[in-house]
Length: 588
Ligand code: ARG
Image (cartoon, rainbow, N blue to C red):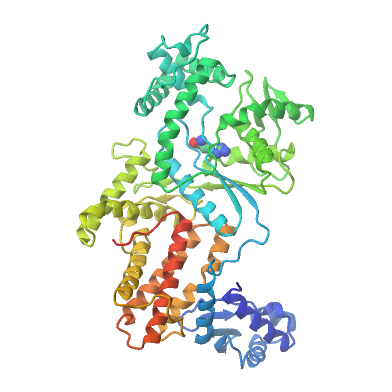
């Protein structure tokens, strides 16, 4: 569906052309002086140089050609040569009727759908999810949803960290505690037990304990490194133990991601790349890319244009063990083989940027990816506490995701009960829904690359630029629509008519921005643009609501028009929050 901006630019371009100027000057932008006009065209200013003419003269000629425009109700030249524009009310209504009938609400679906793999979540098996993993999950999930809405084939892969030192640490600690277990008996040839020798809570205690020991005790650390290496080589007892660790923690992870309304198409893991490593390394050696440096195998990835030093990409350590880089490269091999994606996007902490520069360059240089496969890195900033330092518990420890969520939900519950609008029975459930909006909107409304401050009080507020405010607006609309139905109204009757007041026109204008906003948010991988947009729409709706009698409108046709506009507003807002990865309750 054609955007409102395109309709306007078409009219302007024709007017420029008719006056003898290049039609490309007919670009229209949202006004930066909303008190004077709704849109503006600065083409005459740009054209003045090329045509050696005063800009207002060009503008005058152009505006003269807009006389019988069906799109504009006003086109005015202001010195030195801007064209200020207002949209014709009837045209706006017509546009919104078309938008309301479009299942995609004016978003143009991709003409050449792309296969996009998003690598996000990235939890490490056996370590509890902490707030550091929250951002990846929230941002990645939103981009996945936006991409799908645009019609692309998007594959979300959690890419579990299951192959690193943490596994060796756990194996070592279990061995110290229960050396008699068959997993540690080299001569054992029978079947391994079905049941894991630990529960999730035990596992969560084992890892930090082992990690602390390894920092103090060199011998212990070496033991863990050795165990990691043996695991990677496929020692049967360790593999069996690894399977237990996986089973126990994946169940727990899935439950956690479910609570966040985050889901993955693939539960692939670092270890799945293992089988690709030997051939990949061999090939890189054969082609002369990989060479030995102090015992390790490396590939140079520096480029002449580098302003800072980019160290070589390390493939194998001197003992032959693979590294984080190796797994990521081999994972690319696997992804190309299984999905031949057009793009792989990594949503990972921006502190890992150098790692991805190395991986991407190495993959490209050695031909692991096709020339037209894009490798992109969306590095997000840190979630800080009010003190500006990485978010911690009150005791100064690493905040577990579960605890963060329950803190927010408790606060939400308190506020909702205070409002007393929902029966106690539902309040818990509602608090969960609204709490999730507080967390996700709080995160997504910031540009992903920036650090932000996680402020529980602000995020859970019903006022201001927050998730609960957006939900509150949606719930308000739903309750008006429900009352309309209860009073015998027909929600399918009527159609959107020209606005009756300024606040209605403003709401209508805001709604027209949906398509461009979603398309741009996908293009720039920037969910915060959708947040900014729905905040404006919510503000516009609430002003309209305060200034307009909706259900008490006596003219039936006019009332039906309001109802259709409300339905469109609700659809735009609900579609938007779905793209952000949360939903609205019926009441709150
Ligand atoms: N597990 C890693 C971590 O916690 C993140 C993984 C990101 N994805 C990747 N393909 N490297 O730091």
